[in-house]
Length: 247
Image 1 (cartoon, rainbow, N blue to C red):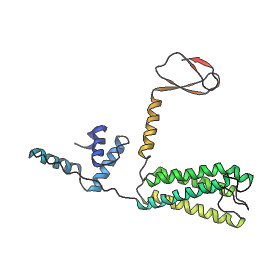
Image 2: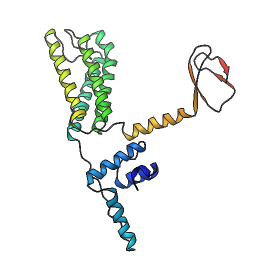
Image 3: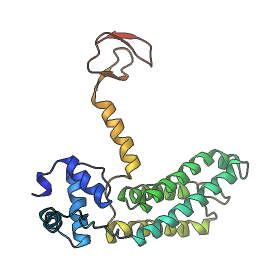
Image 4: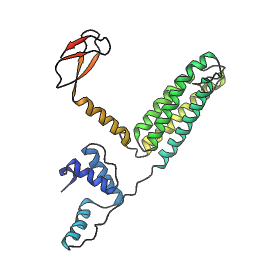
């Protein structure tokens, strides 16, 4: 008996018994179980032998349960914590300009600064949970923020550039480059997991299941893409142009 021969339900039951995450497809669950075997130093045949021993001797003893010790990725969590703190600083910086501080241009840039702060917050939170996508989001927001800080750099402070003055342009670029290198470290030196946290995976799976039973059509009038249940037959109305068509 091996993991490949087991059903997805049985594999996820094993994950639940060991205290592991149960989401993902069959291959991801198998990899998770194999990694757990390596971490605990106990192979699957050894577990089966222990369970068989209790069955043969007719005892009511509960088979030995192995509680996996999760390896904490301290470096990734430390970097993610600083990203989250920096996110709050950027949100506070954007708030200052949104209430009237600075020039008219600065006030118009405040919404973009809020988006940057929220992006850092989301990326840092996902990376703190040990997921690679959090680092990717943070890197994307850092790159976008660096471009804006140079583009709108001037003698006056503004919400998308936390350094001002001509002599600070290179300093701002060097800080952005250093931050990008630091955020890249967990991608190369640690074991960040692929995918998303379980809550986000459930939302994505729910959306995917919603779209499975629908077919995409194009409105004859405005070319808007419409999603219609596969089993539906009759008249439909385009929500954009309000024209009707038969399917």
